Image 1 (spheres, rainbow, N blue to C red):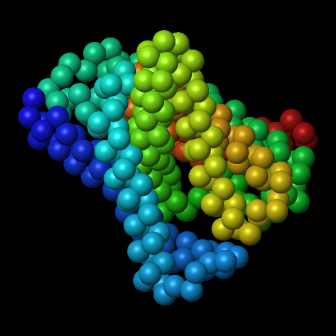
Image 2: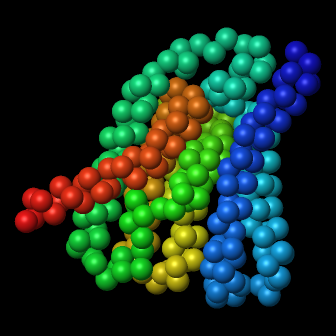
Image 3: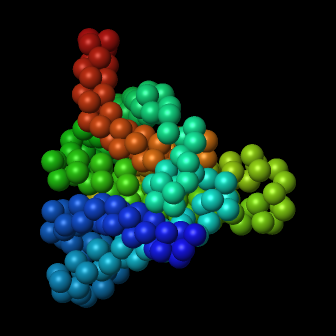
Amino acid sequence: MTFTTRVLKPFLALYGLGLLGVLSLVPLMEATIEQASRLPGAPALSRTEFALLLLGQPALLLFAAVALGVALAEKAGLTCLILRRLRGQASGPATGGWRSTLLLAFAVASMVAAADLVLRRIFPEAFAVVPRLDEVTLEGRFLGLLYGGITEELMLRFGLMTLLVWAGLRLTRGRARPIVVWIAIVIAAIGFAAGHLGAVAGMGQMDNQILIARTLGLNTVAGLLFGWLYASRSLEHAMLAHAASHATFWIATPLLAWLGQAVAG
Protein backbone atom coordinates (compact mmCIF):
# COMPACT_ATOMS: atom_id res chain seq x y z
CA MET A 1 0.00 0.00 0.00
CA THR A 2 1.45 3.36 -1.02
CA PHE A 3 1.97 6.32 1.33
CA THR A 4 -0.72 8.24 -0.56
CA THR A 5 -3.31 5.51 -0.04
CA ARG A 6 -2.33 4.60 3.49
CA VAL A 7 -1.73 8.08 4.97
CA LEU A 8 -2.22 11.08 2.71
CA LYS A 9 -5.73 10.46 1.35
CA PRO A 10 -7.26 9.49 4.72
CA PHE A 11 -5.55 12.39 6.46
CA LEU A 12 -6.71 14.98 3.92
CA ALA A 13 -10.27 13.61 3.89
CA LEU A 14 -10.63 13.53 7.67
CA TYR A 15 -8.84 16.83 8.24
CA GLY A 16 -10.98 18.50 5.59
CA LEU A 17 -14.09 17.09 7.25
CA GLY A 18 -12.96 18.43 10.62
CA LEU A 19 -12.24 21.85 9.15
CA LEU A 20 -15.96 22.19 8.35
CA GLY A 21 -16.51 22.29 12.10
CA VAL A 22 -13.74 24.84 12.60
CA LEU A 23 -15.29 27.04 9.91
CA SER A 24 -18.66 26.82 11.68
CA LEU A 25 -17.05 28.99 14.38
CA VAL A 26 -16.86 31.94 11.96
CA PRO A 27 -20.51 33.14 12.25
CA LEU A 28 -20.10 33.26 16.05
CA MET A 29 -16.70 34.92 15.92
CA GLU A 30 -17.79 38.41 16.96
CA ALA A 31 -19.56 37.22 20.10
CA THR A 32 -16.70 34.84 20.94
CA ILE A 33 -14.09 37.59 20.57
CA GLU A 34 -16.18 39.84 22.80
CA GLN A 35 -16.35 37.16 25.48
CA ALA A 36 -12.68 36.23 25.19
CA SER A 37 -11.50 39.82 25.42
CA ARG A 38 -13.35 40.23 28.75
CA LEU A 39 -11.76 37.19 30.39
CA PRO A 40 -9.32 37.89 33.25
CA GLY A 41 -5.77 37.94 31.93
CA ALA A 42 -6.89 38.07 28.29
CA PRO A 43 -4.02 39.21 26.01
CA ALA A 44 -4.17 42.64 24.42
CA LEU A 45 -4.85 41.51 20.86
CA SER A 46 -6.60 43.10 17.92
CA ARG A 47 -9.86 41.55 16.70
CA THR A 48 -8.02 40.05 13.73
CA GLU A 49 -5.41 38.49 16.00
CA PHE A 50 -8.14 37.12 18.26
CA ALA A 51 -9.93 35.64 15.24
CA LEU A 52 -6.75 33.97 13.98
CA LEU A 53 -6.09 32.58 17.46
CA LEU A 54 -9.64 31.27 17.88
CA LEU A 55 -9.57 29.54 14.49
CA GLY A 56 -5.91 28.58 14.45
CA GLN A 57 -5.86 26.78 17.79
CA PRO A 58 -8.58 24.21 16.95
CA ALA A 59 -7.18 23.83 13.43
CA LEU A 60 -3.76 22.89 14.86
CA LEU A 61 -5.27 20.55 17.47
CA LEU A 62 -7.33 18.94 14.72
CA PHE A 63 -4.20 18.51 12.57
CA ALA A 64 -2.41 16.67 15.38
CA ALA A 65 -5.46 14.56 16.28
CA VAL A 66 -6.12 13.41 12.72
CA ALA A 67 -2.44 12.60 12.23
CA LEU A 68 -2.48 10.46 15.39
CA GLY A 69 -5.68 8.72 14.40
CA VAL A 70 -4.52 7.91 10.89
CA ALA A 71 -1.23 6.56 12.23
CA LEU A 72 -2.52 4.62 15.24
CA ALA A 73 -6.23 3.73 14.96
CA GLU A 74 -5.72 0.37 13.27
CA LYS A 75 -2.78 -0.46 15.55
CA ALA A 76 -5.06 0.24 18.52
CA GLY A 77 -7.77 -2.02 17.08
CA LEU A 78 -10.18 0.89 16.58
CA THR A 79 -12.35 1.44 13.52
CA CYS A 80 -12.86 4.46 11.30
CA LEU A 81 -14.94 3.57 8.25
CA ILE A 82 -13.64 6.50 6.20
CA LEU A 83 -10.07 5.43 6.94
CA ARG A 84 -10.76 1.83 5.95
CA ARG A 85 -12.67 2.78 2.82
CA LEU A 86 -9.90 5.07 1.56
CA ARG A 87 -7.35 2.32 2.22
CA GLY A 88 -9.41 -0.11 0.19
CA GLN A 89 -10.18 -2.32 3.19
CA ALA A 90 -13.43 -4.06 4.09
CA SER A 91 -15.59 -2.06 6.49
CA GLY A 92 -16.74 -5.10 8.47
CA PRO A 93 -19.66 -5.21 10.95
CA ALA A 94 -19.16 -1.53 11.94
CA THR A 95 -21.24 -0.51 8.92
CA GLY A 96 -24.41 -1.63 10.74
CA GLY A 97 -26.14 -0.67 13.95
CA TRP A 98 -26.97 2.92 13.00
CA ARG A 99 -30.54 2.74 14.31
CA SER A 100 -29.46 1.52 17.73
CA THR A 101 -26.79 4.24 17.84
CA LEU A 102 -29.47 6.87 17.23
CA LEU A 103 -31.71 5.34 19.90
CA LEU A 104 -28.85 5.31 22.42
CA ALA A 105 -28.01 8.92 21.61
CA PHE A 106 -31.66 9.93 22.02
CA ALA A 107 -31.97 8.11 25.36
CA VAL A 108 -28.74 9.46 26.88
CA ALA A 109 -29.27 13.00 25.57
CA SER A 110 -32.84 13.02 26.91
CA MET A 111 -31.55 11.99 30.34
CA VAL A 112 -28.92 14.75 30.18
CA ALA A 113 -31.59 17.29 29.21
CA ALA A 114 -33.85 16.11 32.05
CA ALA A 115 -30.99 16.34 34.57
CA ASP A 116 -30.19 19.86 33.36
CA LEU A 117 -33.80 20.96 33.86
CA VAL A 118 -33.92 19.42 37.34
CA LEU A 119 -30.72 21.22 38.35
CA ARG A 120 -32.14 24.49 37.03
CA ARG A 121 -35.24 24.04 39.18
CA ILE A 122 -33.25 23.18 42.30
CA PHE A 123 -30.58 25.87 41.84
CA PRO A 124 -32.25 28.72 39.90
CA GLU A 125 -29.64 31.33 40.91
CA ALA A 126 -26.79 29.20 39.57
CA PHE A 127 -28.42 29.16 36.12
CA ALA A 128 -29.70 32.75 36.04
CA VAL A 129 -27.48 33.78 33.10
CA VAL A 130 -27.14 30.33 31.49
CA PRO A 131 -29.28 29.67 28.40
CA ARG A 132 -31.26 26.46 28.32
CA LEU A 133 -30.07 23.61 26.08
CA ASP A 134 -32.71 24.44 23.47
CA GLU A 135 -32.02 28.18 23.48
CA VAL A 136 -29.58 28.00 20.59
CA THR A 137 -29.34 30.25 17.54
CA LEU A 138 -29.25 28.82 14.02
CA GLU A 139 -25.50 29.47 13.93
CA GLY A 140 -25.14 27.69 17.27
CA ARG A 141 -27.01 24.68 15.90
CA PHE A 142 -24.66 24.40 12.95
CA LEU A 143 -21.80 24.66 15.44
CA GLY A 144 -23.20 21.80 17.52
CA LEU A 145 -23.72 19.54 14.52
CA LEU A 146 -20.45 20.28 12.72
CA TYR A 147 -17.92 21.26 15.38
CA GLY A 148 -19.43 19.01 18.03
CA GLY A 149 -20.44 16.08 15.87
CA ILE A 150 -17.34 16.02 13.68
CA THR A 151 -14.43 18.13 14.91
CA GLU A 152 -14.66 17.30 18.61
CA GLU A 153 -14.95 13.60 17.82
CA LEU A 154 -11.85 13.75 15.62
CA MET A 155 -9.97 15.55 18.40
CA LEU A 156 -11.14 13.65 21.48
CA ARG A 157 -11.90 10.18 20.18
CA PHE A 158 -9.88 9.73 16.97
CA GLY A 159 -6.90 11.63 18.36
CA LEU A 160 -6.71 11.47 22.15
CA MET A 161 -8.57 8.21 22.80
CA THR A 162 -6.74 6.40 20.01
CA LEU A 163 -3.40 7.52 21.43
CA LEU A 164 -4.37 6.37 24.92
CA VAL A 165 -5.53 2.94 23.75
CA TRP A 166 -2.43 2.44 21.60
CA ALA A 167 -0.09 3.53 24.43
CA GLY A 168 -1.95 1.42 27.00
CA LEU A 169 -1.77 -1.67 24.85
CA ARG A 170 1.93 -1.11 24.28
CA LEU A 171 2.57 -0.71 28.03
CA THR A 172 0.56 -3.83 28.91
CA ARG A 173 1.81 -5.79 25.87
CA GLY A 174 -1.75 -6.26 24.69
CA ARG A 175 -3.03 -7.70 27.93
CA ALA A 176 -6.21 -6.48 29.67
CA ARG A 177 -7.49 -4.73 26.55
CA PRO A 178 -10.99 -4.04 27.98
CA ILE A 179 -9.47 -2.23 30.98
CA VAL A 180 -7.12 -0.21 28.74
CA VAL A 181 -9.99 0.76 26.43
CA TRP A 182 -12.26 1.83 29.30
CA ILE A 183 -9.51 3.90 30.90
CA ALA A 184 -9.05 5.64 27.54
CA ILE A 185 -12.82 6.15 27.18
CA VAL A 186 -13.04 7.74 30.65
CA ILE A 187 -10.01 10.01 30.19
CA ALA A 188 -11.24 11.20 26.78
CA ALA A 189 -14.73 11.79 28.22
CA ILE A 190 -13.31 13.89 31.08
CA GLY A 191 -11.18 15.83 28.59
CA PHE A 192 -14.29 16.38 26.47
CA ALA A 193 -16.19 17.68 29.50
CA ALA A 194 -13.33 19.93 30.60
CA GLY A 195 -13.26 21.47 27.13
CA HIS A 196 -16.76 22.84 27.76
CA LEU A 197 -15.57 24.88 30.73
CA GLY A 198 -14.49 27.54 28.23
CA ALA A 199 -18.16 28.38 27.72
CA VAL A 200 -18.57 28.70 31.49
CA ALA A 201 -15.57 31.02 31.63
CA GLY A 202 -16.98 33.05 28.73
CA MET A 203 -20.10 33.72 30.81
CA GLY A 204 -17.94 34.81 33.77
CA GLN A 205 -19.19 31.86 35.84
CA MET A 206 -15.96 30.11 36.85
CA ASP A 207 -16.82 30.70 40.51
CA ASN A 208 -20.20 28.98 40.03
CA GLN A 209 -19.52 25.53 41.52
CA ILE A 210 -22.96 24.16 40.64
CA LEU A 211 -22.58 25.12 36.99
CA ILE A 212 -19.05 23.71 36.83
CA ALA A 213 -20.16 20.40 38.36
CA ARG A 214 -23.12 20.21 35.97
CA THR A 215 -20.91 20.99 32.95
CA LEU A 216 -18.34 18.37 33.90
CA GLY A 217 -20.82 15.73 35.00
CA LEU A 218 -23.32 15.84 32.14
CA ASN A 219 -20.70 16.18 29.41
CA THR A 220 -18.72 13.30 30.87
CA VAL A 221 -21.81 11.09 30.65
CA ALA A 222 -22.24 12.00 26.98
CA GLY A 223 -18.53 11.53 26.35
CA LEU A 224 -18.65 8.01 27.80
CA LEU A 225 -21.33 7.09 25.26
CA PHE A 226 -19.35 8.54 22.34
CA GLY A 227 -16.17 6.80 23.46
CA TRP A 228 -17.92 3.44 23.88
CA LEU A 229 -19.41 3.75 20.40
CA TYR A 230 -15.98 4.47 18.93
CA ALA A 231 -14.44 1.51 20.75
CA SER A 232 -17.23 -0.97 20.01
CA ARG A 233 -18.45 0.22 16.57
CA SER A 234 -16.66 3.02 14.75
CA LEU A 235 -15.71 6.67 14.86
CA GLU A 236 -18.62 7.46 12.56
CA HIS A 237 -21.06 5.99 15.11
CA ALA A 238 -19.61 8.34 17.74
CA MET A 239 -19.98 11.27 15.33
CA LEU A 240 -23.60 10.37 14.58
CA ALA A 241 -24.44 10.02 18.28
CA HIS A 242 -22.78 13.35 19.11
CA ALA A 243 -24.67 15.24 16.41
CA ALA A 244 -27.92 13.46 17.29
CA SER A 245 -27.46 14.39 20.95
CA HIS A 246 -27.47 18.09 20.09
CA ALA A 247 -30.62 17.65 18.00
CA THR A 248 -32.22 15.79 20.91
CA PHE A 249 -31.41 18.67 23.28
CA TRP A 250 -33.27 21.09 21.01
CA ILE A 251 -36.32 18.83 20.71
CA ALA A 252 -36.50 17.10 24.08
CA THR A 253 -35.74 20.06 26.36
CA PRO A 254 -38.94 22.05 25.65
CA LEU A 255 -41.01 18.85 25.77
CA LEU A 256 -39.52 17.80 29.10
CA ALA A 257 -39.93 21.34 30.48
CA TRP A 258 -43.60 21.33 29.46
CA LEU A 259 -44.08 17.89 30.99
CA GLY A 260 -42.43 19.01 34.24
CA GLN A 261 -44.70 22.05 34.44
CA ALA A 262 -47.76 19.90 33.72
CA VAL A 263 -46.84 17.46 36.49
CA ALA A 264 -46.02 20.25 38.94
CA GLY A 265 -49.22 22.09 38.08
